[in-house]
Length: 126
Image 1 (cartoon, rainbow, N blue to C red):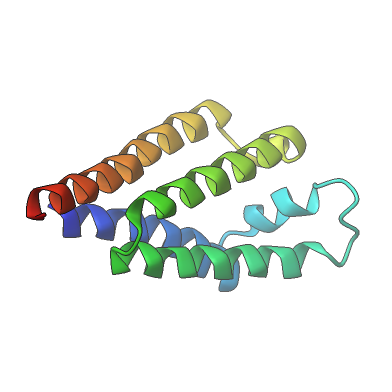
Image 2: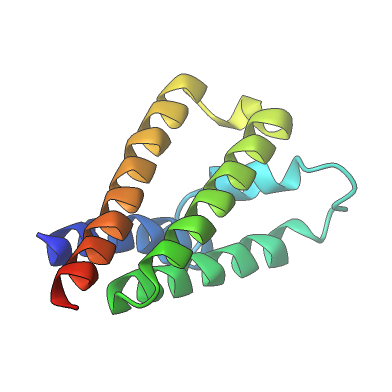
């Protein structure tokens, strides 16, 4: 079950990071980032690519199973920051903000469940 959960979490980060941002298959991601204040006209694409690279690396971290609690903290912080920024400045590019919040809440429940399952397994093996 842990591998299935890890794969599910990783594929979300890979889809958003690699597919949507690095391969530029979801133009609304660029639109949301371009709406950030003080970014400047040329700053959106490099920032989107940086975020995409970070999300792709995060997927690999999740798949590795290393430090799952730290990974959950990083994922939570990143998701909260990206959603807050998107909702504050790029709301017009997000078709259903309530759905975004609900989906991300469910996603974070899986992220933290995975961190707890892994910690509980390590306690039992000691």
